[in-house]
Length: 130
Image (cartoon, rainbow, N blue to C red):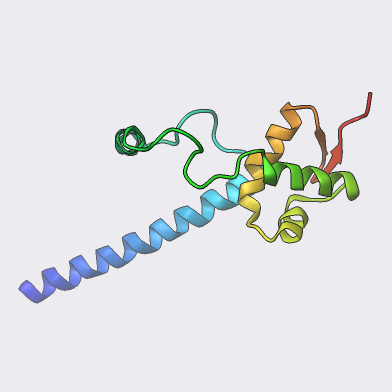
């Protein structure tokens, strides 16, 4: 009987691992199709992490955030690529920059809201000059 229980628990754990991987793949696919996250604010289920992050920040010295360069470096690189190759897609931008595309799905909408680029279909174009 103990072997049956152990075997069943092991099977359930393996299936849960597979389902978690599937959820990750589906969320990535959805993000790629939609182009942005679910909406503003923290993702669901992140409340516990918020407390530890807040505690961690309290102990850090003021100044630059942890290891970030500042200055929107990636956004500037993406903007230059869009200006140089109007109609370029996010996967093409990511390949040119040597980064994963998922980062650009956050950067590009920010450039749109800043009035620097516009989206036509899957391609990105510089915003009309004034």
